Amino acid sequence: MDQFDKFLNNNAWRFPKGYPDLNNEQDILLLELLVSKILGEEIILEKALEWGDLSSASRKYSRLGIIDDRIKKGEPFKLENGSEEVLTYFDKDYSDLFTNQKIEDIRKIGGSSINTFPFFKDSQGNNIGFKQISKTKELGGAGGNKAQTSERQERSLIDLINSVEGTKTIISEDKSKIEGVVRAEKVEESSAAGTEPYSDVKLIMTDGSELLISAKGPSAPTLGSGGIAGIKLLTKGGTNPEILDFVGDFYNNAYAYYKDVVDREGLEGQNLYKNKLVPDVSIKVPEEIISTILKGTPEMGGPVSYYYIGEMKVDGEPEGQTIKIFNGSFIPIDKFIKDKAGKLYAHVRKRDGDLFFTQATQNLNDKTIPVIFSKKADGSGGAQSRFGIIDKIRGVEIS
Image (cartoon, rainbow, N blue to C red; front, side):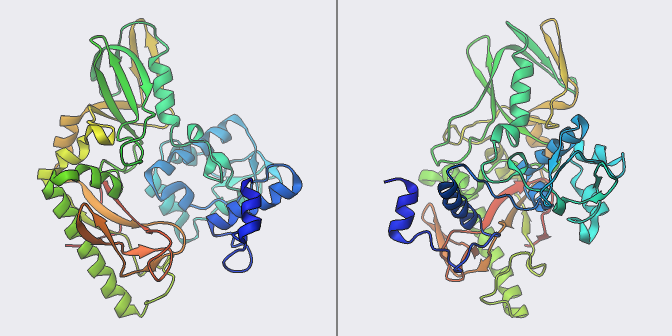
């Protein structure tokens, strides 16, 4: 019995609202399955592109570079009116903003109407905004290829390093050197918690050792932690109790902050998706736990030896046995930790989609902490709050 037959037999194909909600990812996937089965060919339904698809998480920033690449190459975009059009920038200066992922500059230009702001124009000179572009696979649509999106930077870096045979030296943009590199490999294996590995690339050295690299974009990258799943690994078996206490206290304080907002504004039981009265919250990370969080552990795919910070499209060239990188730098983990001391903030951010404030709790290595937001008002359907760490305040800072 295939997946389609199971849907028909157990009535799981029935949509919760009685009709497919095109703002609900599960409804879209089910509708695609049903239509594809009926027509005998794969059908993928794409929603309109939105600013949140490009900016709401650090791994989405690479899609700005994908847009820029397509414009520079003259490759057509699929539009919501059913046509395909080669686009250009409304203002040629916008190319720099997209190439270098200048999130705040783009947000400032687009303002409150950023989804319809004319960043582009078609071949007839018509203004085009994000909402007029279809969210295809490479821009985060259903079935998107990670090699085309979030992994583009890592694979580009690996290809450059492996373009030189034998032992090589890497000189990055900041003039730092890594000598004795034999080859680079993608870190593919999952961590023990089933999360993405802490590192993205590993350098195999002449003595057989490995240097693990965490690759990030230049715009406020998410740094360390691995979310709540990563914190579970960091604090498993009673290790790093100070990190467990920090995260537990932060979640309790965040819950208290949101409860006050919900009670004061009369938002109990309401869907809070895109509600501006309910911001993300942040708190400064104590310096004494930064090192452990940023390095990670073997169970998490660490410890990290270097952070690579650079553009999604790696620009460099080999010169003999030396590889020069022009738009990214390998920063030793100890230097990175020293530079970030007192500058890192943990945050609880809201996920996209239905969002309800809940009294439900979750277990974090025998410590009970709030879920805070869930997909349903009764706390079921999965957590809609996500833990992360970046080098800026996200939303509002709480104590």
